[in-house]
Image (cartoon, rainbow over all chains, first blue to last red):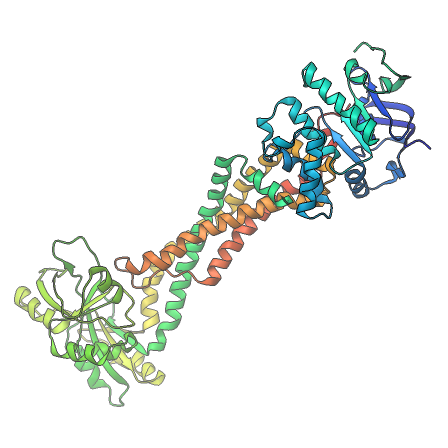
Length: 234
Length: 385
């Protein structure tokens, strides 16, 4: 059985008296430990897909299952609890809390677990060392480069050891060298730690790190291919 | 680190705004606790004062019009049943220390009966002996003596506050242990002697204070004295001490009421100001809160965090508002010139002040907290389609 399964998923947004279709009858299966890139032009439904997989949004129709969790059947509260245990998010703009240090940002998701301060510190140290930023633990986000900030965001996403990593344009704001570092990190997390990674990107170089690429256009699955992606006009 | 750390760090994010918001809560609390303390002081003072068993006799139309000194004997002559223990004449002296910019209230009183009528001041036997022996004796309240560094036996020169402004020498004869005001009392006989010399007439008396032996005796005094002097050249009005003091308090009460009303309005304004700040702060942190929600923070936890921020504002604002009144109460009031009843903040008023601050913070935070908890995470992260 696939780890992630979407069956006939539809997502409509209402704008005044108009309905906008973000996803139309989408059916996809993703196995545990896969590294999948989702590509497509703006407005193709990539981020909507990611939000549905992370339980941040609900589908209008269809079924979304991740592991044992039937997301469309879960309450807001159940989704929140499920999310903190099973999903790690990485956003395009990192979204680190500016008032906290790097280590404190990584520690934030652990506040939802029954852990001692010492256990939390140890996990934070491990996560930061995994992304190569142990020595920057006490720095504020403003004192970090864009690439370092994104690595802290990745440490925050993995500190709870989730099975699924969802990344939304994680290299969108980075230069080529920093992008390459970040993608190498995702690849390592997928390969060494068997994380299932779903990555939304415009960048075909970034998508090339994934083993599989889903091409979306206007909310529909245009291509589902293994290996290097085709480029699609924006 | 805890969720509290995030809430408190968020407060420190824009320090100037945080400080201004704190002030917007603290200042109304200051007015609120200050006004309440004054009202409490007046009420407590009035409630307790009649336990001293005194009634006051003054001119029918007001105490500023004086009566002749001989009325003391006339009043005593009316008392066939031993209702009055002693009568003390008091009149405004209004003296000040020559060439010194210090002000304090002062009265001329009967040296023989003042310690009897005002026995709650705690005159010692030595005080009484010196007071009886020395016609230039002055009785000084402890805070005033401390402020002026006056000790028993010191000679002080005062200039009277009313024409003919006599310059007179006094000797500090008593600093009674329980006279916790900044008042000064001098002998009426000595003042009268100097006054007669300069003005050519005896000094008039503002008030006659009667120490009554019982509640029944007070009732007698309240009816019989005025009846006796009715239609005479010197018509009187006899009142309970509390009633007399209330005539002062009424004037004071008008502005206390005003402060009180304004204070309550300002509290509402501070709710609006704190609400505005918190709402703005939440709007600025929409993405941060959305990230927390995405990381698994529940609606309740987010709501709690924002409420906590509001409560922290309220608590700190309340404390900052109560503290100055407390400082005035504990430090400044006792040395204020002319403070007969120093501002006193009660524990209850402090609690009410701080609790009101908390309520302001909570009220201001409820709506922002609710809107933060209802945040649509995907939309707030700005990546919908």
